[in-house]
Amino acid sequence: MSLDSALSPTVIVLIGGIIFLFIGVVGGGVQIEKIRLPVLPTVWRLASFLVGCVLIIAALILPKPETPKPLPNPLPATLATPLPPTPPNTQPATANRTTSRGIAIEKGIISVQEVKEILAHLGIYQGTINDKDDEAYYSAVTEFQASRNITKDGLVGFETLGELKKAWPERFGLKQRQDQEKPLGH
Image 1 (tube, rainbow, N blue to C red):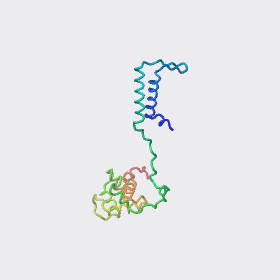
Image 2 (cartoon, rainbow, N blue to C red):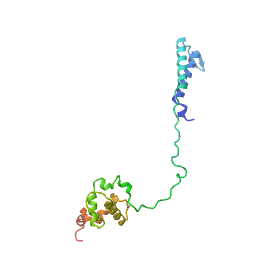
Image 3 (cartoon, one colour):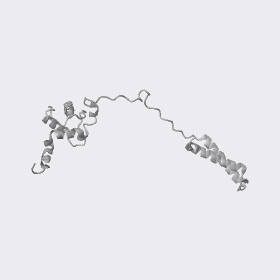
Image 4 (cartoon, rainbow, N blue to C red):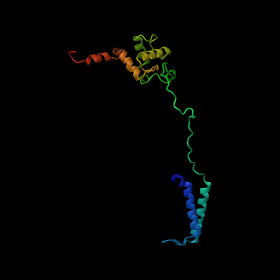
């Protein structure tokens, strides 16, 4: 039994009721070693007796605090064992497309139209250049990701954005900066 359950509110009320009941019955006049309790007047003894009875009844009638039950294992024993590793996904993740186009597009770093322009420049996308994320767009993004050996999910995240910048640095103004950073004489 833990200290928490031993000193629950019900137990404390019960102990208090027993003490008041004892004082009401005995009424003082008790000496334990060097401690002497004086005799109480009848009114105080009666009040103590009644308070003790009320506390004991309350402790017995009031609902007991529930002890927390252990949570059941959410997985059956057959599923609790580790599963074998699954092969990497080679198909675009169509489930993610309903909620996201990729963090780079969601954050406004690049648009679907700009991605289509870059992929068309690279000869990967042949569809209409607009801001609609259709199946041809996702297929082209996945094909680009496969050509760059990065995660093939059809979404434009930071990794895909970085590879798009490497594939056409002039589009992002990166080639000029690299040329400007070269030391003189080279």
